[in-house]
Image (cartoon, rainbow, N blue to C red; front, side, top):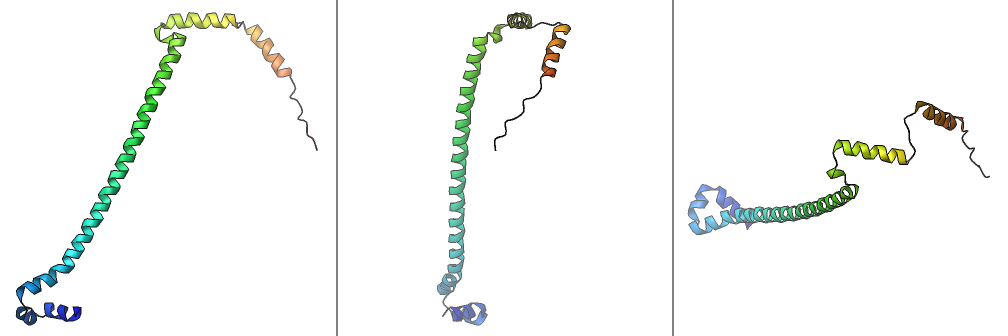
Length: 130
């Protein structure tokens, strides 16, 4: 029957002899089916886009939380050091005090002596057990 309907639609004389309502209904049915398929595809695409958006928003929220936590840790660490309140001169003075406490010095002779001690050391032979 589908073939005969197509022939009737293609044949201008047959189309004129058919009732007008039936001709329109037969012609619209495939168009309606295609339109429904397009609508279904569009709805699926919208649902997918919403899912992607929600996922991206969740990741952005998590990243924002991580940033806040990291900033809090940094603030806590710098407050322990007192570095945020120190001027460059105070930082330099504090560095020098710590270097003295650790018995560091600027003497080239002491540096050379320490380097010679390090350079004289022979690397240990690895124990190879068989």
